[in-house]
Amino acid sequence: MELDTIIYSRVSTDDQADYGYGRDHQRDVLKAYCKIKNYGIAKEYLEDHSAKNFNRPEWKKLEIYVKANKKGIKRILFTKWDRFSRNMEEAMRVLRKFRDWGIIVNAVEQPLDLSNPNQKVMLSMYLIMPEIENDNISSRTKDGMYRAIKYGAFLGTPPYGFSRVRYGKYASLAPDEDSELLPSIFNKVSLGVESLEGLRKQFRDKGYKKSKATFYKMLRNRVYIGMVKVPEYRKEDSYWIDGLHDAIIDITTFNKVQDVLEGKNRHAKLPSKKNEALPLRGFLECDNCGNTLTGSVSTGNGGKYGYYHCRSNCKTRVSAISIHNVFKAKILNKIKVSDNVFNLYLEIITDVQKAKRGDKGEHIKSLNQKIQETISLIENTEDKYASDKIKEEPFNRMLNRYNTNLMSLRAELEEVKEAKALSVKTIETAVEMIKIIPQLFENGDFDQKVKILGLLFPEKLIISKNECRTKKQNIVIELLTRVNKGLKKFGTKKAIISDGLSTLAPPLRLELRTL
Image (cartoon, rainbow, N blue to C red; front, side, top):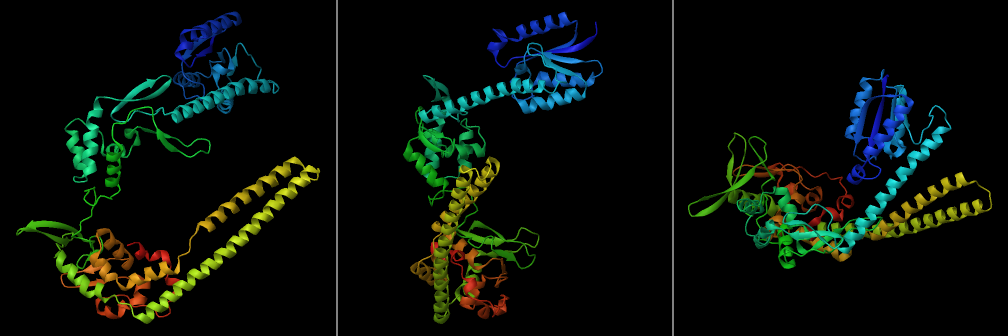
């Protein structure tokens, strides 16, 4: 007897493996069939994976074996087609591959002659029905999980400090022994006194072994205040609700922690390069080597002193106080706006915004007109289809095109409606602040100073012990204040007379109104 046949049995659950229509039953059926047909069994494979795809351990072994023995293997047999696959597209791909190898693939209880094209209709039915069943099961499972979460169940991996429990038919959480550390962790963080990384290392010695990323993620997780997140599903947005589990952290402490993480707590020492004594760090360029200067604070002579210094071998090191004095005297205090230029600039910006408001009205009117025209096209197409003037296929194609265009127009209309033009009062307030830039910088906190520097100087300031000069300045500020005239000897770029003010005054570029 020639050993030219492979038999394949598959189940997807332990229950099937042990009871009812399990692997043993399939194997017995296949062996009996081979005995009747006088087929010699070269190899048998027993699988316990899903048939959603062919990424199954035993099937991979089968393919390797067949590929190595293509000349000797004539057929692969299984009991029914759903044992072979529950994915029609994947199944057809595998069948074509084995057909090219000259190997027959068939089900003994649903035999088909695939050399007959008509038999492929039955094959499609055998393959598509299990796929539809899988899709239905998947859909019911997702619906069930969504309903359970909406009830307050927790279905994900339990976060640190929780273990899996059940409340009736719903999966949920319960605090475990690790949860004893959590109140202390959240309380410490809520004070905003110590750095997060320092606290993580402290609690690592007490048993908290998670990574930095996991630590930060834990501090933001609302599961610790007794909530669960209902995910986005079937076009419904995600949202948080009260869960079935008990909270470990009270809401007040949790909110304080969020303030610390968002930087709202001024005393919080979050991982950051902020240092109130070094606002120019990152904006200075070494006059010797061209590298960006960093900064640090040294302790000595009974106090703390800031320095800007270079990382390269040129060893540039300049006192922060002296640099601040030079910057203030030679650059910041030179920013002055004459009343004539100021009034002209204010008038130009106001005119630009008024024009924008007018353009917005015209744009809305135009979009509404296009929307009505598209609706008329849709209605006209529907009337033609109803009166049999156009056939179904072109009707569907036209309707799809019109509806797509209509959705795009409506979305654009909403965007235009929501776009807000600045009021005259807002413009006046923002432009007035240009006059007091030196005072804003002097009195502002670290973040405000950084914003002002970023606005004024798109490129680095070149610094030495007794000198500070600009490489490039915001062209709008330059034209308004004529800083270039006062700082010409320090290398500031000369303003171009032909530059127009109206195009250099976009309101969102001058973020001073937010300071």
